[in-house]
Length: 415
Image (tube, rainbow, N blue to C red; front, side, top):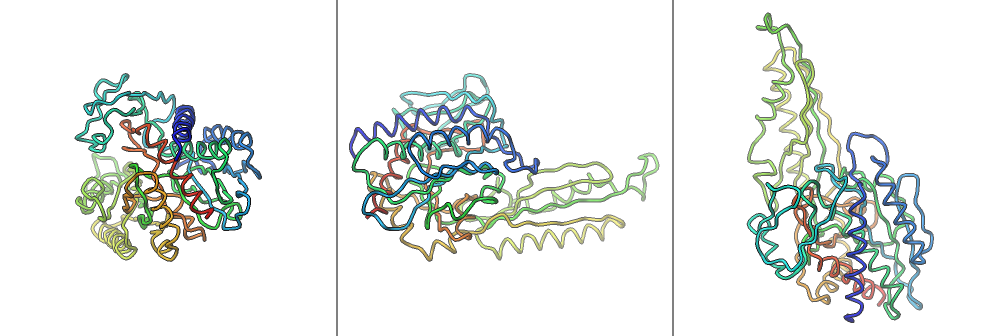
């Protein structure tokens, strides 16, 4: 690809990314509203105006905070429409307000320090991928917040590619259906998506390391247990009190420690305690259950169900309410039936001078939901690393390369 185009992509993606991350779009799993936070509207309105300025058609910001736009195909192309998708929200795991991006230019391969948090460091031991970017610019936040590269990098890369399509003649492309979603981080990114606004196939730009390409993700469930105990004055509690909070803590400790995220990797599944709250009368445990095989997840949930019954027998009078909700399925089941979608992605990554890194996502994307809604959608890299943490980082070159892969995919689909 022409050096002028690559320089343009880097400049555009970088400028947009540094602007987008300053907008607080943290989602909130407890809000019950759609979108879950008002900050997501701020970014959505900006993106709507930018899509209009780029000349896209059917640009719309709907009542649920989804941003849509269509770029008509190059002259003479009659193939399927293709969707590029990224999510606007950031994880509620760390603060997302007042983000200050910091540029660590000409990275020397050593320890990265954070200007507002002396005790926080980013090291090649914790993030060995850093060793692949000597001399590059590494972007982090200032140590107080996450950076928001997940997924504002993906948003910026899609927007940079669209800017290039408008600026440079001769960049062929199919009809593009763009969508930016809210609340992906809390598992609701596809809840209110309008399928007729999407293409026949799609790509989320929500992966990690440069070159990553993912067609498999967790089978994912959400689970909660409510413990109903009985409070008695502690001076007279013997053989009377059922301390729901204490019993819930014992239950959490009862589950297999070595099937938790901190002890698992690659294709190993887990139980992950995401919340614990309670007192003597009532306590709540919240879990997410993950594996790449549905059957193994079902066994985990059955194990929890049987453990709950055992605890009720152990503590006479205790009641435990168990509820489960499916979040998303392993998208491999769908994508295996549509090999061309992955083959073109591999070719685009290789033609950009990169080596495809095919791996299973230890998480999920909007694409995992879209696959089962009729739009086969694998996941492309965005370059975001150490996401959901104060040490989140991204190399500047990733912004350029992801945008380049999008353009190369456009050319391949237009052929």
